[in-house]
Image 1 (tube, rainbow, N blue to C red):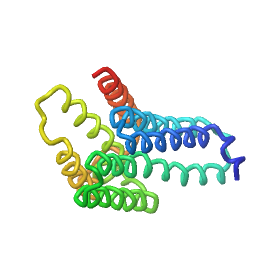
Image 2 (image 1 turned 30 degrees about the vertical axis):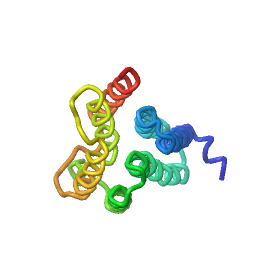
Image 3 (image 1 turned 90 degrees about the horizontal axis):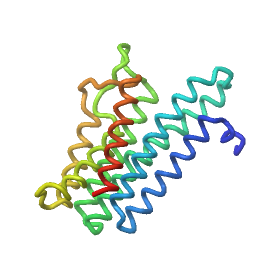
Length: 199
């Protein structure tokens, strides 16, 4: 099975999983800001693997199928499991934080399962808020906590977990893929990383 990682796109996905796992570790030891940065970099790896896959015309169908499954796991880890762990760790593993974490992971798993089964709409749009926006919300809350008179960051994180879970499973249209989406992800991830690392 290890030979499937010699594919360039799959290797980038694997790097994303390493970054996401590191983000979880950092959240567990209380290094929340740098953990969010690692989560944002995992998001960028997630974008990059898709671009590399599309630019590999000789990639076998089996390699692409496995890569798609691996990519879905990366999405779940960096965009749902990591935010859930961060909310739990920041709130000292309270029961309310556990409920928010469960909602995030369940909504993330359901959303990813839905799109792996049905795909995007015919017009290229998806439904509901994509999971990667969880990272942008976390970055915004932590940056605001240091630059604005924000009170009760722990409660805000729990509330954000519940709200994001609902938005992930909502029916409004949201751009699915494309250069504009990738550029937006790159811009927000870079801005978030700089803001968190230079606070």
